[in-house]
Length: 326
Image (cartoon, rainbow, N blue to C red; front, side):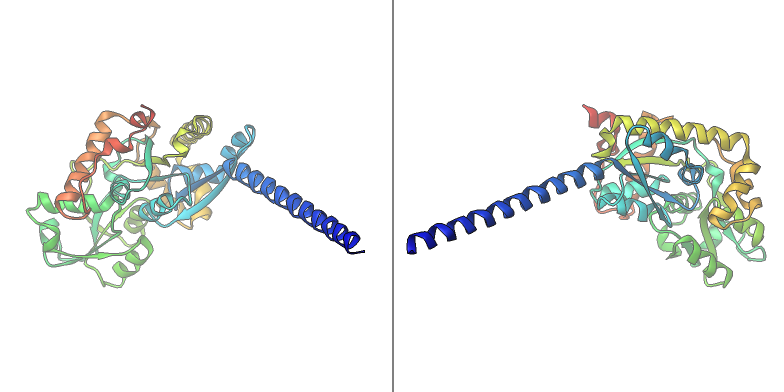
């Protein structure tokens, strides 16, 4: 009797183990399937305005990526620094920023790679003051409160403009605010000057009748960069499609600025006039990262290190796609 009971218990135990094993295999298969599905989802970060924003709005990138089995997950960010923070922690695979954010991100050991850039657009960012402000030039900013987005493109513009005027960051009172908060502070006279980029700049010029005391001409290049994580930078199939679609949409923008402005206006909540002004004063085209562009980035990095804005020296070449391939 005891022997039969033992055999019966062993049989029950065997059945339970088989069930557990089957469940484990099913769960493992599900995990592998989920991982494969995740690999086929491209997570793209974009800002309120930029070529990626327009590309998202048109919806053609998703169509062409779907043909080779990819889906796209879009995430909006208020500015470049926040976008690259997400890239650093692995929340996105690809995105765009101005010149300065990649410097700060690389200094924080973000696994970024420069993929491509758009032409320089120095007039697309500026230091502005109220139309009736007594501030006439950059020298007059001494001791004044200047609003800007910390670590953004305009951070470098401010540094270079102050340098040319014989001033340093210590000579002013920087007030670090994202664009929407900075505009509110500017309108409320809580800051004396605002360093800002398009299309926020165009909107301020038209709606607030601001006075520009310095733009980027002769001081900075003001390029838009497209960047990826180390891991995604090796996905040549997806990157080729993304680049092709960026080139197409860039040409469409250049040839149809008014139509694009009307198309984008409800998307981003800005006037057609402000957007059209922005589009008409920028250069178009998608450029491969050149040694000259990397040299310009190195100058920004060296300047920021000298000013103790980043904790250690960085080598821009460490984020070069060509170097990563070697």
